[in-house]
Image 1: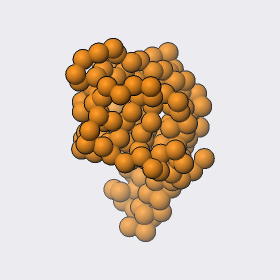
Image 2: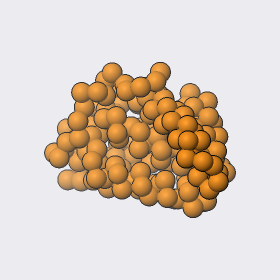
Image 3: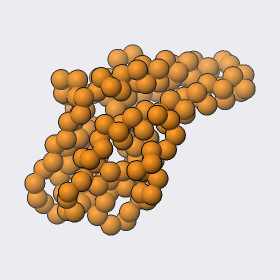
Length: 170
């Protein structure tokens, strides 16, 4: 599925409780990557914290401190209410995201190489493909988390970036 997710379109970033106020990556899940990957992680975390909409279904005790990790080929989203309360740990299998992640990694590698030597028109073409795959991955992530976590489109795109950055082997 490509494009915005139908359940996400109406979600808007909230200054209230439906948001992430702190986001960390499980240190055991992080494979040290190159400078481009480190930069992607930092930008995605900064952008999520700047504006996001994130709600754990069946709960109304946000905002949350969230940790993302990979355990046994599953994405684990752990959220703790800032005001205190029970921790939620939501795990979803990553194999359904593998194809789009693999394609996204390939396009990102091409993009990072192209920005050094390719003409601007070629960089724009690669970037369009990268954005399309990014949207597809964000939508697939929303589908995997359906019924567990609701988020807006920008948050899902940035979380997809972080999932890829955690899973990056290159």
